[in-house]
Length: 564
Ligand code: TEU
Ligand code: CA
Image (spheres, rainbow, N blue to C red):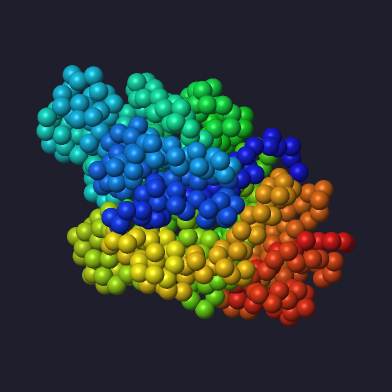
């Protein structure tokens, strides 16, 4: 066990709320801040240590709030600043931290900065964004944005293009301009003064860009806005932001960066303790957004146990003792894990619990996403009209232009669309799952009649109860947080689908053994045959693992070694 400085965010469990889909207090079909306030007992009972709210700031909502028009105010759709403050103090009185979402890489095109910047080259805000005159009437480079189409947009008033890695309604801020860096720091300070405890930083590794790419063309390859990630001054800008933040807000203030295209061997400069930049990051190494991948790549990843073994092995071997890791399977950009990597029919409960055993008992801070504690699943989309997300809508357009048939496109987006995780929380079995008395902005998953919080809160065997139990255990056993983690390698090909890891400390050794497949699998050889006590299992009979001949589909058992 390495010597780790103890902090709340290493020991805590983070819970992401997607406010739009959490709970609607006024019947307009959209979740809101007073709605979150009505569900505080639910959140507190679950036992999480912090909630992170996806953006609730003033926004024209082209990308559900990831396009901010005023960083210092709440969108009226979500409530008021006073209501945010009530929420913050209610959470604090329950010992729960509140985290915001800092959309630092780009603003909305409706932000006053962009109005000014795009009006004239001489405007003092002009240099807040990234401009280029283009080349002989064409956009400067051939990069395709995250949401399809060229990443540059023409601005007639100044007769130049501006860069947007995402929508054209999300112009990229120019972090090479010190005034922009100061603005973002001021935004952080503003929210600290309002009582916030930290931020998740949206595409944190996009803020520095290699300007030599701005005129790049390619006849053979498709250039993607991904190329702009991880620019040359990234570490410097994150250090500046985080160090100044800590100087103002204290060392406990959490800076968690969302960093797509970061890997075990590249992450140290951003999260290493010695580098004093971000505290934590989450990459999409494990769970990449699938709309961007080929069918072949998607199929290769079917064996989640193998994928997880690689993931944990590489992140731990590169970073153990030098930085702190995160564990997550779900967020608002990903399909639901039970559907994507698990089983959302016959073994849904077991699969949901197996993933929870892993994220809550592995080394690193767990980040849960609303509904994960209920085993919520993907949505059975049947037509393009069911989708609301710009990512899916633009993808449909782009694929049609390439000549793909509608049913082929539907096959791709149904399991992969971000809307899968954004469907409203399933509170009970009343209309619209009790989420709203109006018409929900995105349809509720029809399985709400059987999958909902109200039933699970009463059932000691439910996924909710299982989550609670694991959270309590983690919170009351620092050895679960700081103990070593050892990933066991399979001894034969039929052990491939089983993930076994152990956590050890002076307090003893804990094994987490999960069959991540829908078929029976052998008991792995590394499991001791005697001297263990079951802490919990996702099969209700809790048969001891060694009294069985085989592991059942999605069986996951956590046990403590009592003697050797
Ligand atoms: O996501 C950035 C990101 O890397 C993605 O997973 C993105 O959803 C995907 O690549 C689109 O194809 C962040 C936010 O989490 C996401 O919701 C926003 O849409 C995006 O940034 C822009 O702010
Ligand atoms: Ca509402």
